[in-house]
Image 1 (tube, one colour):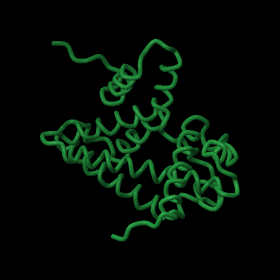
Image 2 (cartoon, rainbow, N blue to C red; image 1 turned 135 degrees about the horizontal axis):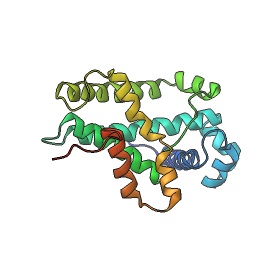
Image 3 (cartoon, rainbow, N blue to C red; image 1 turned 90 degrees about the vertical axis):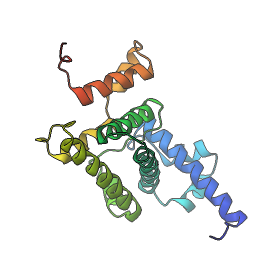
Length: 205
């Protein structure tokens, strides 16, 4: 593999800084309220320079989503390598990671029904490929967990998958954090319990 030239390295570092800024702003404000001017100001570059890397606000958000899926795949790889872990253990670890990312202000949030962003994502091959990889690998764990008796086998696997994805945009952690009664670790544990065990009390005895 050839090494990047100095110019290419500079461009890569700048793009990484841009995506990191977009990620923070999407986590803090969401897609609708984030502006390209804010991204440029956060990175410390002119808006014209930013447009040399990403031609639109939608392209910026898509790049952040690609980075998120890459990070999710890295977590999935780590969980796959865990010796002795069940499929349910691995699924729970991924949802824990998503909650921790959200509480740390590192989970980008995008509107599911925004037409311009949706069109950008549906046309983004890398995003779609990564999303399929994540979904396929989680889907295999879900089916295994159902076969193991750890997840209700009468539930459609796609329902379980969407429930796990929902942890990335779950409003409950933010509400609990705003209340000030719980620390981040407590919030993660509480949301994990309700996600995986429901609201019924634990069996006695």
